[in-house]
Amino acid sequence: MQIHDLIGYLAAALTTCSFVPQALHTFRTRDVRGISLGMYSVFTVGIALWLVYGLVLGAWPIVVANAITLVLAGAILAMKLRYGRCRKGV
Image 1 (tube, rainbow, N blue to C red):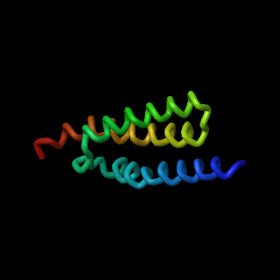
Image 2 (cartoon, rainbow, N blue to C red):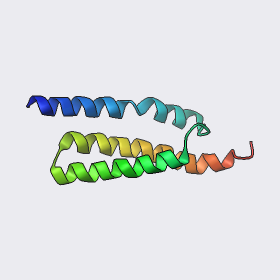
Image 3 (cartoon, rainbow, N blue to C red):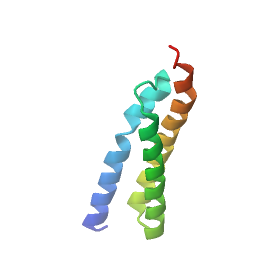
Image 4 (cartoon, rainbow, N blue to C red):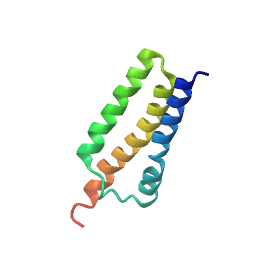
């Protein structure tokens, strides 16, 4: 493994792991009041495009990190859509 691959995997691991606390908190509490629907919508599309980019290049650090992040961000976005509407009157 070359140094640039190692840097890519480390960067991918760190940025992907940064989503885990937010995802766990959101899954546990169902509290999505502090999450911006617009930001997560754009972010999720951006992550999907990074995933496609990584696939086209065959860059596995990009593919793996963005596949995991897409699942986490997509789940948070889905919860925002589902639970965000329930609490508007609260």
